[in-house]
Image (cartoon, rainbow, N blue to C red):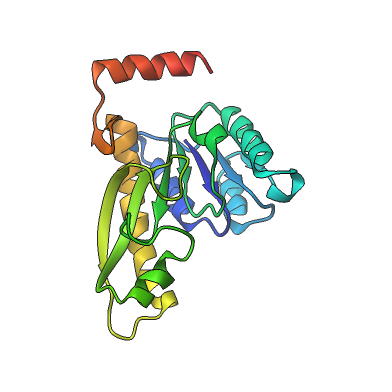
Length: 211
């Protein structure tokens, strides 16, 4: 898998640790970012994982950047792209070419977007959480793979609540990505199921051969 990050890479670090177990079933072949010099890139490089950067500001528009990001991901021929704290929206050039999942700090479809934790607090919900979903061309709108709830406690502010969500999401991300790698998946409409059908195995093989 290729993991995309924008900052410290704590979720990427959890995946790196999981991948050290041969029975986990997955390996990180590269770590990509939209900005240079992040702590997460340094961590990946120290672990011997190739890194790359596709700076958003170096491109004239979003679609051009999206195509460049898709090409850099394709250099590593991943079976899965994991957006783990990546703060850019991936467009059709990426999501139309690579199966990609994202981790989001809310129980989708509630509170999509970059301010999910703040929005949940402002709305007064008593339960929020985290969601792993496949990416599509919308904003946090793709088929849901897994969710876990996190209670909102009296006195929570955004930082305190987000920290508890991060603790849960790291565990869920590692578990879910491992299951996707070991078992495969099928998507029927908006329903994601672990395990491959014979047709999905054939389709995946053909897509990989055509890259």
